Image 1 (tube, rainbow, N blue to C red):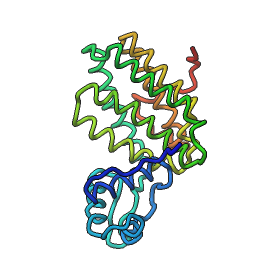
Image 2 (spheres, one colour; image 1 turned 90 degrees about the vertical axis):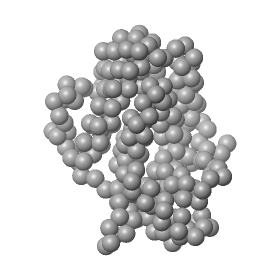
Image 3 (cartoon, rainbow, N blue to C red; image 1 turned 120 degrees about the vertical axis):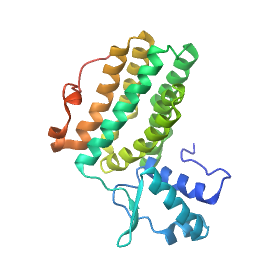
Image 4 (cartoon, helix red, strand yellow; image 1 turned 45 degrees about the horizontal axis):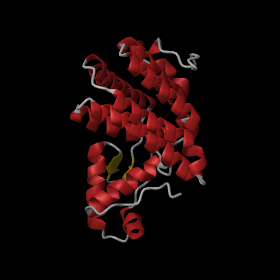
Amino acid sequence: MAIMTKYEKKSLSDIVVSYVKNRILSGSLKSGDKLIESEISSELKISRAPVREAMRILNEQGSVSFSPRKGNQVLEMSPKEILEIFEIRISLEIQVLNILVTQNILQEGDYQKLENLTLQLLDGEQLCSKDEERVFLLNTLDLSFHRYLWNASESRRRMQILEGLFYQLLLVMNQNIVSLGSFEEKAQEHLRIINALKTKQLPIVLEEFQHHMHKYIEITLGDNMQLLPDFLTGIKPGKDQSN
């Protein structure tokens, strides 16, 4: 089964943006990697003008940086900057979850769709024959799960920001794909979030979400965990919440 995305008919610059984002999802692009316009244009068999425009778009989205000395390269971040992105993402996603629960937005059909995405995670390992396919599918399904919640809240600006932050964090986590977890682990974490959402009790939902995120913070920051702010230091991973 073909896992990797095929590029749809769209503008050439959009194709390049999708190409770069898919390489991030597959784990083949990491923080600090160079993006050489001539190589991308040759790979995609297009001129360099749309590649240049795509680099500008990706720069605005926060995934690519440019300097006269280094040219275009995948965003590099210090531990403090990584933590800042985690803080912003968690804060915004907490706002989204707050909207979903307090306004009683999610209904049975929504839970079914979220559970279907979780079932796809459980089936993911056997669908992939290569590591790159595995990482791509794992990240794509994870993004699809969170994107569904962002979209359900009808918070368009939050959704745009959160998606950009998702890709930025992936660039760091791709340095050590162990930090991404396994299909089984991710599925169980998502299932616990779904079950928490069904209770319609915000404290339970936020606890599950924060435990979910803390695991990635711990693996990504490693020895820099002392940088954690007060609102995250009380959230400990590893709590036994098996069903």
